[in-house]
Structures are given as structure tokens and as C-alpha cells.
Image (cartoon, rainbow, N blue to C red; front, side, top):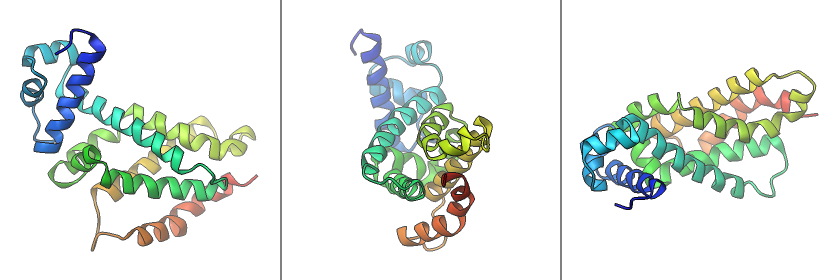
Length: 195
């Protein structure tokens, strides 16, 4: 393993992601990650903290990469309501198709991972950065506060995690998810999106 701290961190996160792909996030241990990274478990704990800290760092790295893909996907979509629904649809699809996200949020690891992810400050920061521009008029006029936006982001994260981790009866098709979002979720936001 390289001696540079940034290189070591990347190597540990890569090792952890590989373990999640092979074993699942809930079954991966610190010993598995240390062995895959080529370091002792004591060194892993000393330099990188607990297995949960490493898990959260992997999820943050993967989620930031996915957020960049979402933004690129949304280029050219100007309507705030359409951007919101499309960003959620794209995110649900990405969670299922990105290998590390899929390993984390499907199968036996889903509940374990979702319980930790919903408390992640990094996911909330990513969510606020995406939602705030859609609600700028309501925020500028004082209709919505920062606390309101934080609550809305929490709701969005819970919806995304539920679609990803709990597929539901007959695993909802993308068309069914879009229908649910436009029929039930979007009306709660639209009154704040339109100037």
C-alpha cells in the first residue's frame, strides 16, 4: 500500500467496495477490509476508524459520483418539477445499476445500509445542493426556510432509499415509479417551485 494518506484512503475505500461486492455490506467485517487492503486490522482502525466509518466514506464517494452523473443527465431540463422527478427517476435507476450501490442497497444488506445511509450528513448535503435551486423563489420570499428544505431532503432520501431497498410488490416498473412520483410526491412540491 502506498504511504501517502490520500492513496491509502483510496486503497482502503476500494478494498471496502470490493468486499461489499463480494460479501455484501452487512456481512463485510473490518478484518475483510484490512485483508483486502493489505494492512492489519489495528492499522485500519487507527487510520480509518470503524467499519461503519469506512462504509459511510465509501457510500459518500459513490454518491458524490452519482450526483455528478445526475446533474449531467439533467442538463437541458429547465422545468423545476420535471427536473425533480427526472432526478429521482435517474437516481433510483442508478442505485440499482451502479455495482457498489446495488450491492449496498439490495439483498441482505439493504436494511442495514439504509438505516445508516438515512443518517448520513453527506447525503443530506448532496440532496440540499440539488433541491435548493428548485425552491429558490420560495426560499427567497420566506415561504420556505433552511429547516423546511432539510425536511424535504429527508423525505426525498427516504423515498429514494425505499424504492432502492424495498422494491415492493412485483418490483415496480420505472413507469409505475414515475406515476407514483408525479401523482403523489410532486404535488407536495409544485406549489413551492412555481414563481
